[in-house]
Image 1 (spheres, rainbow, N blue to C red):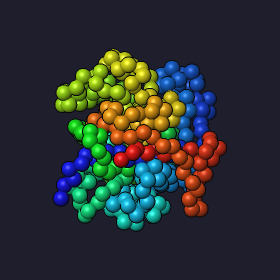
Image 2 (image 1 turned 30 degrees about the vertical axis):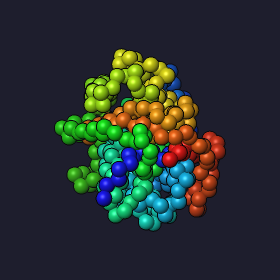
Image 3 (image 1 turned 120 degrees about the vertical axis):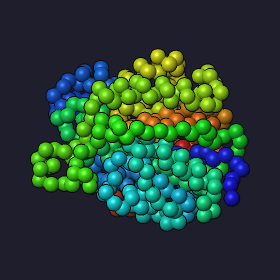
Image 4 (image 1 turned 135 degrees about the vertical axis):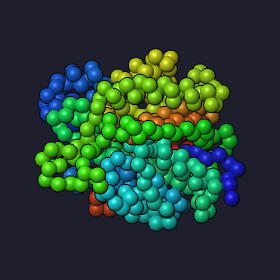
Length: 365
């Protein structure tokens, strides 16, 4: 069975941990000044998970918010896909942890590992799963989450000033035409896998006294190589997506991309001729939250612009691996904002910076 209706976004949810680290706090450990951080990255602050707060905890808040925004119950969700580079454990899948935390007991739960491209890869899997109605599944959740703070060397100015924690989720399901996803395109280049990685802790270099002493369980990044990669791949993603769809840049209402470095993102956007009011940049306020970055930026666009039914959104993501992808999304409804209520013994109440922030955005169907 294949759905004839397109598959789009029915609701979105985000979650940011309560603790906020400013540039002044990060600069002290990294041996730089706050001005150095803001001038080179544009990041002003980043959120950090509380002790004992794992990636699955962050993701669960975002998933519950997204499902509620879509006007659904957890029992309606047939597929739960998590994109993350910072899983709770090497196994089982973090999605299984999220399933238990949210009560999505009827969902097939699995992880996608594509670094900062993870949510877009997850959305593609969910989209195709729903289009073929695997097991009669009608609704899916794609969530991106990172707990990068657990893997940062505070003395490494190339990573400590950029990476942060957060989660964002989207409920996917049938929407009315002309809404929904189209023109997915994904890619990867494993020859560049060593440009950004956590060197130890896996089967290649298991944890040992030597890897701990060598600080090999922290993120290592070749910043210059990554900068060149982004400068090359981001423009190609935009132009290729437009060419495939037969569109001009003026036909796109909003460009939503991974947020690795706001300064770099704005510069490339300007070079491409993307107007400031059509380029979503949120890395200033949250840093690089990896697989959560693109859906968080999309949720912010829904919340703040707001997006209107029929608006065309060009999605672009890129990350370690190296991985990359793009898609077109025609928005199918106006947002409705709510907050995630307390849940279970490990919940963090919503509302403000002292208790964690969780939001929902829903789309009419």
